[in-house]
Length: 285
Image (cartoon, rainbow, N blue to C red; front, side, top):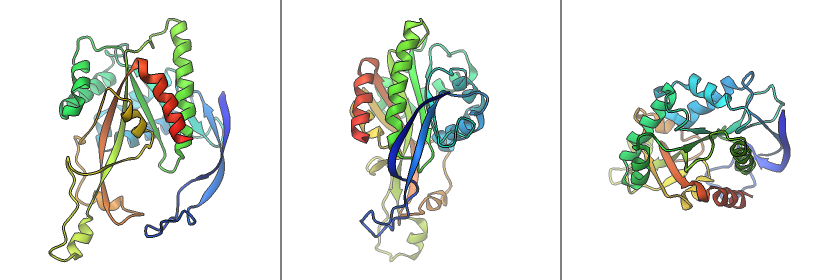
């Protein structure tokens, strides 16, 4: 069943902007009707699995994405998908939440908890998260998983978060296990690096833009800026499985620099979640 249909007006869907042109005149605009649906186990499995693979990027192979997709789809009244061609079409975006404490005995959730522990321990900025997930048993943390195809407008996100708030409130009224102490959002960002192709052609004195702690990081999801602003802690981490040297150049389609992706995690106190959702909506309106 469709939750809501919303016309976002003219939105950019895959721009053709020239990297040297600062104007927006060359960005393709298209009017699209987006429709929000409850997760549909009968039709969403493959589309959801593909979006999860995109979210976890290089480290997707660590997880049983089939089991994770099934777990998300086992909560048909919690979370949303976004489609443009009816309920039977593949989702272009999704958002859901899993209770890490409730599902701690499921192998895929055990893998997620171990992964979160390892990555949080690798970055001092995530020390509060590291301490939290190291407790036994793990606290009732709501793991927020959300992803969308790369050319989806960010404006589809606030309705999904707003509906999630409503659904969690209804679930708590029905005594279901969604009374969280914290929310943890897994996302990813990227750093720009000097293209290896350019370095081969550059003059000897030309310096490359290096990654690492001093590099500027960018968001794939613009709402992450607001989430981080309201977080108890946040930080990035390197993927366990490294990309090869040519991978960054394969992602430089519309820019001069190559990019290297990295994961990120944002921890929110549950008492701040509603205000943060409101702030995301205001930022993306």
